[in-house]
Image 1 (cartoon, rainbow, N blue to C red):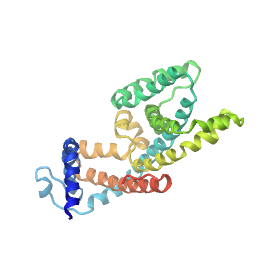
Image 2 (tube, rainbow, N blue to C red):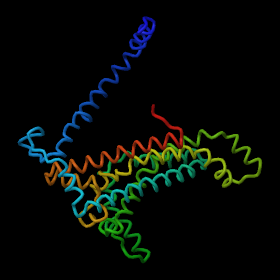
Image 3 (tube, one colour):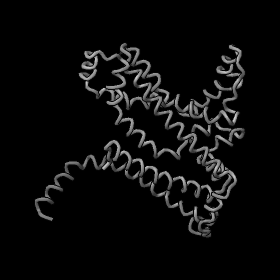
Image 4 (cartoon, rainbow, N blue to C red):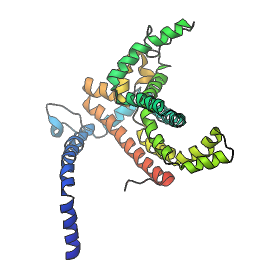
Length: 305
């Protein structure tokens, strides 16, 4: 390496040394809590016996994966995961876009900020708190069914009817997260040149026409980008939410991969089988994430590197 290039590199390293030092704790935490535990993946190919440890447990090859696919409810769990996750992603993005468009049309700044703050704060409530509120609200004698009864309608078993529960899970997740999801689209709306709206108004375009021909095309690339990136979350239907809301009465439509792994792998002490299912989900998610970034690059010209 030429001396001039080496001096330039040394100067850059010395200049950015405080930043590297600040990065070091996060890097150590990533290695300790994300990469080092990956050693435990080997028990997916073993009959894990805690007393014998990872290394001493006997190898069984792909037997755990065969057992996973031969389980009577394996495809049901996969179906539930895809239905709930895709519903959350698709409808959640649609609600976030519509809410951002509506909020952008509000002219009272104090009202706009108040509504945005109230909806935004729901995102930061844990599912333990928000789920407890929902259980009280959606119970047979909760406030929702009380309102339905007051207008002469029959009570709805939101949390105990297997046919209704997936819609309950999707709707409550959207309620909790659409305000936070709208932040990105509100930021994209600020990037639209106001002169385009003024020119359209001068030409006689109504507010609806300006929304259709100026606003939506202005944020279309952001919508496509977020849709492409969300593809990587298709296998993640929301562990915390379903641990709080799901119950044995709705397992046929509400039991997903993560909740099944929790019950079988941890509570049922079938560590090898639970790890095999988790590894399967991780591999599929890695493929989907890679595909999502490829689509983001092709459709929205978005790149990480």
